Image (cartoon, rainbow, N blue to C red; front, side, top):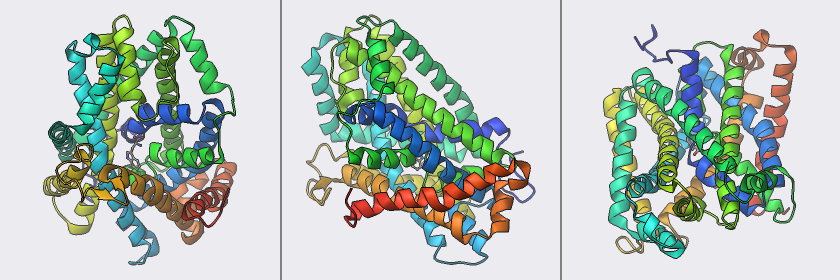
Length: 458
Ligand code: TRP
């Protein structure tokens, strides 16, 4: 049975939470975005700064979310209600999170669609017959093909809806129990292959990732690293909070959060270690930007021995990672509708999932620019970029800041101690947590936000 006496579903095992939450965290952010922003920011130092952001800002906010969920057994809106005892403006933070989930999933699904398209391409030898320019054009053509993007967007959202309708244990947990180990094996396999690439590519990659170089580092790198820490750990919109609400044992809050943040970081570093050796072995640039995975890598796969199968494995991996993340985004919206409106899971998921699909249509058509041409452009950027910008640059950091302030300053100390499980850990854990969640995390995020509004210059 998946129901508690109160009717709330819960994870079947402790691993259930860890795998599902790691599934949420490990996604396009790790395998697509982290490697290219590491490249753009010059490697070494950026990685160090990013690790510091994860540890000092990401981890405390993750614990804050998981403990709010576990103690209240509610999705984001209800969790704020629970701790305040009534409806206050804080419930709005919950709604902001739900809105962020809605927005992120709508364009995330489009990128996942590109990955699925490359699975299909890897099954034919079309890419192998083209030269480098030809391969890069394949992506340009795909990006501009509205109908193909719509097709994959639809298929991906349908899959996400199918999993989430299955429920916490039978849908999400079961899917992540399969996807996550598979994903891990694929990453390790691909890294092992990279070790044996010619031209010392692997060593060059290690040097690039782990040895600090300052050339391309700028002050903006710090802002980017912090923003990315939020996105990659799925923070700031109640995804971890919602998954935490299906967790039973209070003792697990801190350790599970450590596991999830740790695995997410390891996979992000491994992703660099599988991509950069090939980039260097074949004399490509590390600063390829967003096209790194969809343009540069396919060019490399076409030159490598066994490239077709590698390409297939890689894009399967990317799609799995995207799916387990997308599930968590949908679950926040579904759980909120179930908890607040009392709808049944199936109806809640079908209706909100379809709405997200529709909202993502202009993103899917963004590259084509023909249909919807003018109204998909807002502030001069296309709909896809605008949504990504709004969510990752504003909604998530703002949500994270407010969650840190809530847990750090608004929640009663007794509730906070209880939710954290302070009595079950060495005293220093709780003290450290309080310092980070009250001071370090909010101040860091505030600096980033103030800088974005232009109120401070660094
Ligand atoms: N963390 C995922 C990634 O790295 C994306 C994601 C899933 C997410 N759920 C989230 C981001 C919730 C922010 C909030 O790709």
